[in-house]
Image (cartoon, rainbow, N blue to C red; front, side):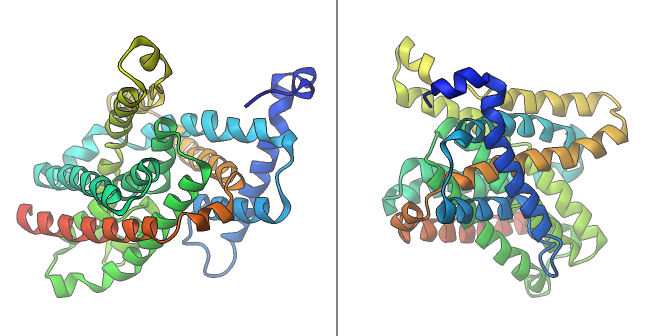
Length: 338
């Protein structure tokens, strides 16, 4: 983005305030919508990107806000992803057990690979395909935002990917509780299945606790173990992006380096080794969600609904196929390994 003379006169911090304030206003509206009857189960992140897109396409975005919106989409997002590390520990992975870890890791790798392959077959843009693959295989909107720091896809691709994982993750949250009896799954196997295959953490909580406390707790732990895979996947995407920009020194210089992913891992290690006060974690968790919501609000504001429609049905079909694959494949592994 090119800074205007007005931005220079106001100073770097003042130039960011209008955009951050606009994203903050959308964020506040998203949290407010969640207070309405029947809306409490929706993630504020999902509501924020939807409200941001509606607002920008109905009213427009003032130029004075663009610098702050870019800051929210990049800097605030990276800070939030690093803070996610405070919600995870190595002991949580151990609690899932060797079979559970194998099911989670193999499912993630297979889902990402199959989605990427199918995206090429369907003719979906590589960036959008990678975002849908990351959101489906890891942790929904958070993974999409993290992956986009290295894929650098257009805002419309991010909005489309978030819409896909939200739609199919919601379908899973509603459908899964109807299936454990039919599929002969005990609470731990059912919890592992939800944690290994449903997109968002909130959706996993909703689906797993519907079958009782034991299933809910194990499903949540399994999902958190899956979230730990965010860092290696983003780093791998960064390496792919580095190869795509060229093998020479100039290409490597232009390739994005996901340092925030290393910060995410570092906080997991710190949280595993040191006794961080509960008060700090209880404060960090909502702050992390808030920062992610502000970043997604900014992303929604930058999305053009006409361009979303222009992407057509194929990315939606890709999201559906990816969702069906992760559900069936992970179920087979859970049956095999538990």
